[in-house]
Image 1: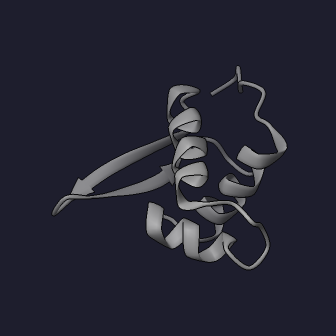
Image 2: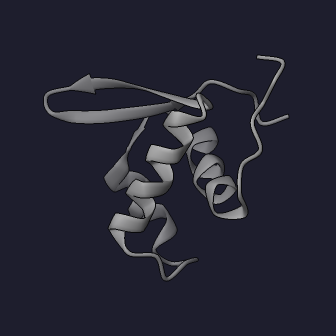
Image 3: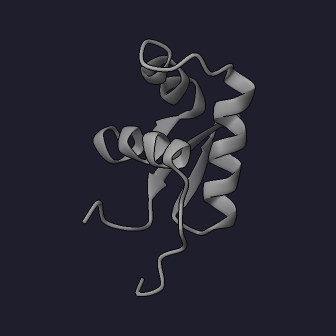
Length: 75
């Protein structure tokens, strides 16, 4: 992917979790970020939604759970 959209600092924090542990569910991302941020689960899910719209992450659905994975390298 050559045209990587601009992502916010908050989205960047979510991406770091996805790069480290992929694929991962929204609950896993929320749990990973709960110590370093004061974000509510709804906030994290909104950030995930924004990243999906920007096409920097994708997902697979398994038994009513979405597992997110990066579509761009961390570099």
